[in-house]
Image (spheres, rainbow, N blue to C red):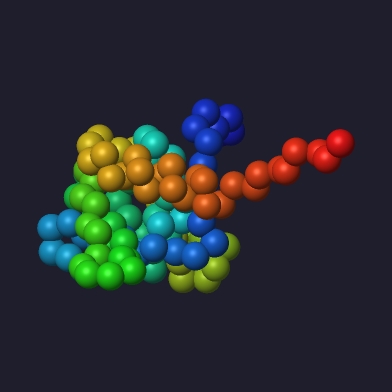
Length: 119
């Protein structure tokens, strides 16, 4: 069944690690993000319909990394085109303001801006 995507996704060519927010074990890498959800690329299949506490650990130029805690539900999971990898889509239930800042920063960083035509 095909559903037209209603949420614009930002693809990430370099992956950020995602951890289990309860036990701090790695779950996978961020595949893409939106204000309302994200895609996780994992080495293991994730349970569809399950609620997850996710933790994004963002590297910092100086000092400790920025940790963003999220609460999300896994909506789907299927094999990735890369062998022994799985893609899982999550809907966010709760995210701090830092998550919106991350999404906006990634959108800005990975967007192409055209320069005005010279006269």
